[in-house]
Amino acid sequence: MSGWGVEDMSKEIVADIGQEMIKVGVIEDGELVELYIEKRLSESAVGNIYKGKVANVLKGMQAAFVNIGLEKNAFLYFGDIKRDNLDDGEIIERMDVVSISDLLKPGQDVVVQVTKDPMGTKGARVTTNISIAGRFLVLMPMVDSIGISRKIEDETERERLKKLVNEIKKQPYGAIIRTAAEGCTKEELEEDWDNLTRLWEDIKKRSKDLKSPSLIYKEMDFLLRIARDIFTADVEKFHVNEKEAWERLKEYFKNISPKFEEKIVFYENRLELFKYFNMEKEIEKALSRKVWLKSGGYIVIDKTEALTVIDVNTGKYIGSIDLENTVLTTNLEAAREIARQIRLRDIGGIIIIDFIDMASEEHKKKVLEYLNMLFKKDRNKTQILDITALGLVEVTRKKIRQSIDEILGNTCPYCDGNGKIIYYGNKNSPRCI
Image (cartoon, rainbow, N blue to C red; front, side):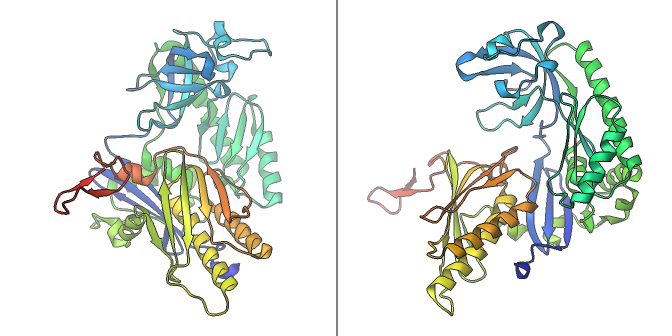
């Protein structure tokens, strides 16, 4: 599959900072593959830590609603509760607790962290299993185990990093070793650990001093968060068009990763950096229902309340050998574009891909293996199931934030997103329903 260019890709980050929104794109081999957008007036709450007050407990749903000071109460599921983080007088020691009402009561204070932003009519999703992200580590104060990013594939490096983290641990806390830690020194890991543990001690102190509902800890701003999470060693350049942002990025990396400073490029007279890099067309494509493939085939992406369906069609492509080869070639090309569109649009939840029917088991296996390989570059947790007899593939992808169409678009108030124009006898008076 080397001809498809999955490995050894050139990678760049482009940050277009405007008055109304900040747009950040990740480019791999000249193609936009990831897009992050934050409107200036609708800042993300993911990562923020609050001291909240339990508003009500729903025993039948094994969940609670917590007032954290936002417009809507946050949703806390039973499985997201770590008992160690409840109020001192409310910690339940028994191991036979089976109901959320045994753990939480209305009016009780609880420290929670936002894991999903409010979406539509739903409030934020929260957990009491706090985690704090640094450059190389994610501190997990509620557990005492070491995990490591699946993107660090070299076993020798994985063992080296785990050994170093176990050596620098001064407290009985757990950690996840991030992709950015690959190749870093013991000193770099230790500095990250010390900074994170000091921050956690401060958070614990503030949680006792503040009244609920209160914001205890605010996650770093959008651009620095992006830099921390996706600016890894394989990124060649980080382009930015605002001097203040450029200086903040340089300052951030000055102490933790000085070698990254020279990769940050400032464009003084480029007000619209996305246009300069010809990325606007890719965003338009990411908002379209139909996406054409280079061969002449196409995919159709339909979003419903419960799931997203992606259909593959040969379109104008007729091939040159035989039908089976035409189908395989289209499915492979579609797989590549589907993986890119899922990352680009940030589609989450259940995704059903309807590939063109393949008679050959070998061809089915080839498409599935290729799809799995493509998703290795996805930062979100993704699971891919086998191809069914009907050529359907089920993909589950973790949804953390709003997808691009939800951020940039508004649902039509007439058709509620159904997209149908109905004519009642008179074509001059259409109605959208």
